[in-house]
Length: 296
Image (cartoon, rainbow, N blue to C red; front, side):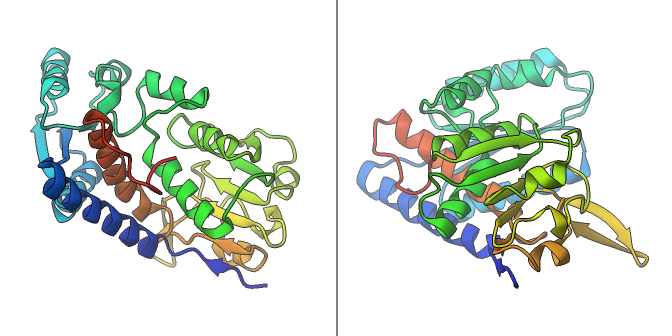
């Protein structure tokens, strides 16, 4: 068996095109432009690349982009003041504070100061609680992207057995909640799960978000299962740097029915879903219908 490759890059391009079309209609019919504010504190190289890509993608779909680049020594009080000013700005519909923050800043305090309606990362405790109780919320971008791809591949997910390997607040836990919301039978596993391979082999849908390079091999995969690999790990192989997922791609692809590659799988969906969340936040703020197919 050779698994179908779920092309996240192509899927993300389609999501961005849908967002762009909806943004154009908002401008034409309502005179509204969604706005995304991104705050970067410090000089973390990876964060600088992410912010640059987010800015370019925001402009590409016709949204307003508000960048705030602050020095690493920025005080917590000053950062909180900025967040509060963005909360009050009617042109800003989405606020993202790029993580990680410098060590002297309290990330939880900063995130929970963002207006939950503008929390397009879905990290605010109010959004976490709303998602956990099945209510309308802002949903974290990476799990939302995974859900979109799963719905596209399977159609309805009801009744499928799903195993999520990883219990982070950013991916593992919200992913499990989203799958529960689509009536899957969900198991959350992790690195300390007894006989992890046997647990994974019971999954129709296997989501790997454990943060360990190539930890899950083909022995962990049920024949015909759908494998969603959230991991992005930089390793050195044969003297060259390489990006790999949490799944050993070659062995898993030989068993699975469908699989996301790394790179080019889940990764491109994260920024696409950030744009979708900003659009959703804008529509909610203005009492307009939410974009179909771009929310949980």
